[in-house]
Length: 417
Image (cartoon, rainbow, N blue to C red; front, side):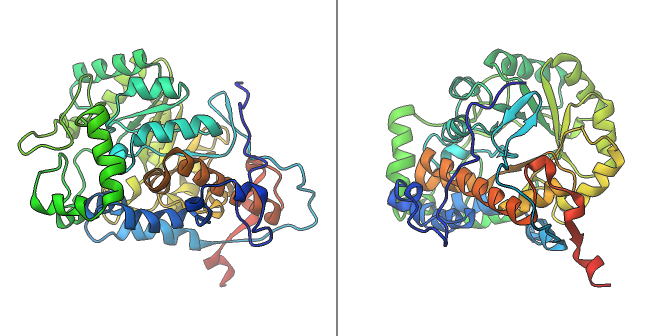
């Protein structure tokens, strides 16, 4: 097993009991006000032009699943144990032969380099510095090869096209880039109805308009620190990693993105991928226990329960509410069931671990952190989440993420009877 290169066990974030802690004093001034992941969202709302913030923050149609992802955590309450010696507790978590510094990582987020300068690199470098996994999105704007050089341990997430020859060419490129873990997202046969994007003036590619120009001008911090800085130093961003070759530019009046025939995808395509891909294979976007069983039968090394952050099917069940059913169906405590969608607090992460998840991935907050403060912002966000987990492990009487027990939680509905 690969040893952890760094540890978050002694991470210090601002605390009401020690507001003047030396670690907090070393933070840049703008980060000292960031006490939770939600604080980054509030700051990003002010910093980003409305169309870009709407793209990152929004769900689809009525946002029903987006809201449910947060409310699902209210289904459970802790029953803590007391007088447990937790002085030597640790966040270290083993996954795929690697000992990570914490039981969470950075979920794949498309177009991160539009909200934060070199956003994908910022996330990758922060993840490497703190020894947590980062998953590069297939709809990213920085070539996968450059991200892999910055963080050789990063994972790659693919929206595979429906044509077998195009799938194999993409896998060839991912392998040459040096990625060892491939995440195949399976909940996007078509794009969700994100009408909030249309209302806010966002599209992919972005279409030049007076409204878009005014949004940029009225947000000078983003305009100069992200948009113009990118154009001057790196030229017009393109969708770099959706296929084996470069895709459409992020800004165009006429170019259309090529998504491939994704509505053709089926389990035979996953079998083809498993046969070709020699590294770790993860299937992301599963909610039904039957699909979890099929993914394992097809040779997936792990799964990520996800409703795409509420961005695909409005009304899709939240992963947290399906987690116990999936874990029970699989019946193998060692099989890596991972989860994302709606995680904002260390408490959320611990609840998922208690219900059987092996790992949690968090998305939007790290995007906001990168937009507001670059790599230091992402590292600080990682530290905040780690400190919350470390603190609450002591409060529930757990010494490690693996030691968080199902016996420590009760369904609120059960307590009411």
